[in-house]
Image 1 (cartoon, rainbow, N blue to C red):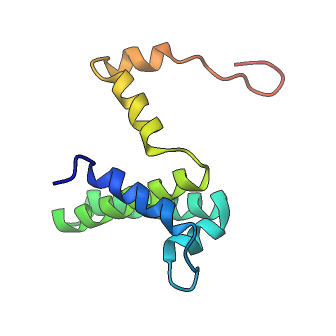
Image 2: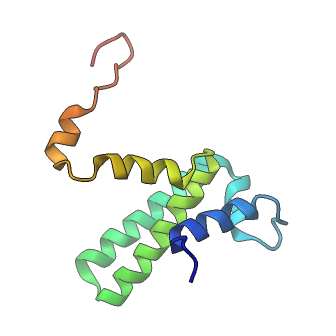
Length: 115
Protein backbone atom coordinates (compact mmCIF):
# COMPACT_ATOMS: atom_id res chain seq x y z
CA UNK A 1 0.00 0.00 0.00
CA UNK A 2 1.21 3.50 -0.81
CA UNK A 3 2.44 5.73 1.98
CA UNK A 4 0.48 8.62 0.45
CA UNK A 5 -3.09 9.25 1.48
CA UNK A 6 -5.94 9.17 -0.98
CA UNK A 7 -6.11 12.98 -0.79
CA UNK A 8 -2.42 13.27 -1.68
CA UNK A 9 -2.87 10.86 -4.58
CA UNK A 10 -5.97 12.73 -5.77
CA UNK A 11 -4.14 16.07 -5.56
CA UNK A 12 -1.32 14.59 -7.67
CA UNK A 13 -3.83 13.33 -10.24
CA UNK A 14 -5.48 16.76 -10.39
CA UNK A 15 -2.05 18.35 -10.93
CA UNK A 16 -1.34 15.95 -13.82
CA UNK A 17 -4.71 16.78 -15.40
CA UNK A 18 -3.41 20.30 -16.16
CA UNK A 19 -1.56 18.85 -19.13
CA UNK A 20 -4.36 16.65 -20.47
CA UNK A 21 -6.86 17.48 -23.17
CA UNK A 22 -9.86 19.45 -21.96
CA UNK A 23 -11.97 17.24 -24.21
CA UNK A 24 -11.06 14.22 -22.09
CA UNK A 25 -10.68 15.74 -18.63
CA UNK A 26 -13.40 17.40 -16.53
CA UNK A 27 -10.66 18.53 -14.15
CA UNK A 28 -8.84 20.28 -17.00
CA UNK A 29 -12.08 21.99 -18.02
CA UNK A 30 -12.48 23.32 -14.49
CA UNK A 31 -8.86 24.47 -14.31
CA UNK A 32 -9.18 26.19 -17.69
CA UNK A 33 -12.01 28.24 -16.17
CA UNK A 34 -9.58 29.69 -13.65
CA UNK A 35 -9.93 30.17 -9.91
CA UNK A 36 -13.29 31.93 -10.18
CA UNK A 37 -14.93 28.97 -11.92
CA UNK A 38 -13.27 26.51 -9.55
CA UNK A 39 -14.43 28.54 -6.53
CA UNK A 40 -17.99 28.71 -7.86
CA UNK A 41 -18.10 24.95 -8.36
CA UNK A 42 -16.62 24.37 -4.90
CA UNK A 43 -19.32 26.63 -3.44
CA UNK A 44 -22.06 24.73 -5.26
CA UNK A 45 -20.72 21.44 -3.91
CA UNK A 46 -20.45 22.89 -0.38
CA UNK A 47 -24.12 23.91 -0.49
CA UNK A 48 -25.09 20.43 -1.71
CA UNK A 49 -23.11 18.98 1.20
CA UNK A 50 -24.97 21.16 3.69
CA UNK A 51 -28.30 20.11 2.19
CA UNK A 52 -27.32 16.45 2.40
CA UNK A 53 -26.16 16.90 5.99
CA UNK A 54 -29.43 18.42 7.11
CA UNK A 55 -31.97 16.38 5.25
CA UNK A 56 -30.65 13.29 3.53
CA UNK A 57 -29.25 9.92 4.47
CA UNK A 58 -25.65 9.15 5.38
CA UNK A 59 -24.83 7.85 1.90
CA UNK A 60 -25.90 11.13 0.28
CA UNK A 61 -23.76 13.10 2.73
CA UNK A 62 -20.81 10.78 2.15
CA UNK A 63 -21.04 11.26 -1.62
CA UNK A 64 -21.38 15.03 -1.34
CA UNK A 65 -18.44 15.17 1.09
CA UNK A 66 -16.31 13.34 -1.49
CA UNK A 67 -17.39 15.86 -4.14
CA UNK A 68 -16.54 18.83 -1.93
CA UNK A 69 -13.07 17.44 -1.15
CA UNK A 70 -12.37 16.89 -4.85
CA UNK A 71 -13.51 20.39 -5.76
CA UNK A 72 -11.47 21.90 -2.91
CA UNK A 73 -8.38 20.20 -4.31
CA UNK A 74 -9.18 21.53 -7.79
CA UNK A 75 -9.61 25.03 -6.35
CA UNK A 76 -6.26 24.78 -4.56
CA UNK A 77 -4.61 23.59 -7.79
CA UNK A 78 -6.13 26.50 -9.69
CA UNK A 79 -4.29 28.84 -7.29
CA UNK A 80 -1.07 26.75 -7.25
CA UNK A 81 -1.48 25.92 -3.57
CA UNK A 82 -0.15 22.50 -2.67
CA UNK A 83 -2.18 20.18 -0.48
CA UNK A 84 1.00 19.75 1.56
CA UNK A 85 0.89 23.43 2.47
CA UNK A 86 -2.67 23.08 3.76
CA UNK A 87 -1.75 19.92 5.66
CA UNK A 88 1.21 21.73 7.23
CA UNK A 89 -1.15 24.41 8.57
CA UNK A 90 -3.39 21.70 10.02
CA UNK A 91 -0.36 19.97 11.55
CA UNK A 92 0.72 23.25 13.16
CA UNK A 93 -2.75 23.70 14.63
CA UNK A 94 -2.90 20.13 15.96
CA UNK A 95 -3.22 20.09 19.75
CA UNK A 96 -4.38 23.71 19.91
CA UNK A 97 -7.98 24.47 20.75
CA UNK A 98 -10.00 26.14 18.03
CA UNK A 99 -10.48 29.17 20.25
CA UNK A 100 -6.72 29.49 20.83
CA UNK A 101 -5.97 29.09 17.14
CA UNK A 102 -8.51 31.71 16.13
CA UNK A 103 -7.19 34.17 18.74
CA UNK A 104 -3.63 33.66 17.47
CA UNK A 105 -4.47 34.88 13.98
CA UNK A 106 -3.71 38.48 13.11
CA UNK A 107 -6.79 40.18 11.74
CA UNK A 108 -6.17 41.40 8.17
CA UNK A 109 -6.47 45.11 7.62
CA UNK A 110 -9.44 46.35 5.69
CA UNK A 111 -9.00 48.99 2.98
CA UNK A 112 -8.01 52.20 4.73
CA UNK A 113 -5.89 50.38 7.30
CA UNK A 114 -8.69 49.43 9.73
CA UNK A 115 -9.07 45.86 11.12
